[in-house]
Length: 271
Image (tube, rainbow, N blue to C red):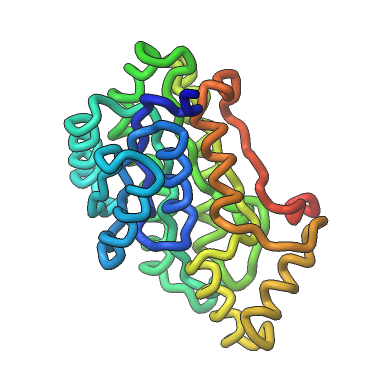
């Protein structure tokens, strides 16, 4: 039985650290029959990630590329190398993200710009770089191309101690909506997934920062407290979250664009 993404070609950014959402998305896409280029600014775990992807799909169906998502030149290179390797681009997942935990008083303008560059500007650059290839996706698949942005529930939820992350994610939400209107006539769908508390290395580091600020006793207490804000009272894991990215990239979602998929255990219902 063919997979839900059979034959499609995907780029997934922020896929260089085991245990994060990007790696889980790559793995899920490979299992559904896609060919995948995973990118990241680091390559310390490249061998382990490539081996993991080899267990999820054919060994020749995955490429790992070093990538500065804030660079137009690097995006042009990644887009071209993906097309050279696999013949096109049908799916773009903007997943890379960073966080600097501080409020306005203790956030420098340089730090704010750094977070905005990765969490927001990179979405713009990536969509622009991949757009020519995505436009041709409809010639191969009835549902056309798909862009899925990982925007976090932070795009809806204010936070006095993480200004750059929350502002950048909120800006990314509006960019997603604008792109959905612009790219729709070309049969390119643009949607976003908004994870809540998902226990990735980045989140664990963030919770550790809150512990240092004195907000929680330890990381486990922080997880329990934040998870308790949601209706289910639990945190998620990257593999759970990846299912939403599979759906939005598939032709099952061919009539879905400009949508914000909450994957948050209902934490966001209070906003």
